[in-house]
Image (cartoon, rainbow, N blue to C red):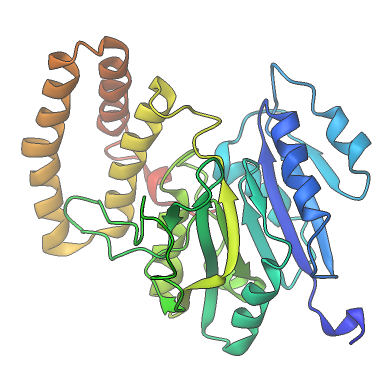
Length: 306
């Protein structure tokens, strides 16, 4: 088979103060079996770590140096606008891949034009027999929470069947060019967390399917950028959850969501931080809620970049 028979895949990852971690991902990508790829690394204006060794060690990649930190969505969007691939793989820089991981994803995408997004099985890098992602159950339109199938379970092959899922996983997901042309880019107003969930919801509303493919395997070094529980993560996770609700919940469910968040979730979380004396996290949480109060009537909440 000639290389022309393999559609070009653009692989995009975003780096922020993690040059060595990103190089470890690129080292694993060098070993993959799929023969027709281009790779973009977006440096999101790293402040504490020089990204120049990335290009020196991996001259085959294209590096985009952003002059500001655009977050996950904005950073990826920079490269998507330059991508030439028929398919675009977004993958976290704190992952490493199995050498044959890309072929099953492409085969699934090519099987049906209705398929817009595919995600692989994801296991934890430091606990390689433990599953992080094997698909998602539907998200509650009221609590804005959902369950990751297989999460923290030992992988005994119990999730080795392809299946439709409501959401791909932002740590590794492949998207067709047709989807991007029709739906647009990720909403960069999120900056961090829930942006891929919002994108998936928009993609499903346009009639595309999202699939989990277990024959593809990726290992994830989870939360290496934000930390397992940090003020940054607390702020953007809670800000993003409410932003997702505002953009993707409608009608009576939206009213119920407002009631649930205002009278149950928000008071409960504030009490939890006070009880645990987590004053810094309390401040971050209140700032997340405050952002929404100051943007109640902002049209930018609903905008989608092209």
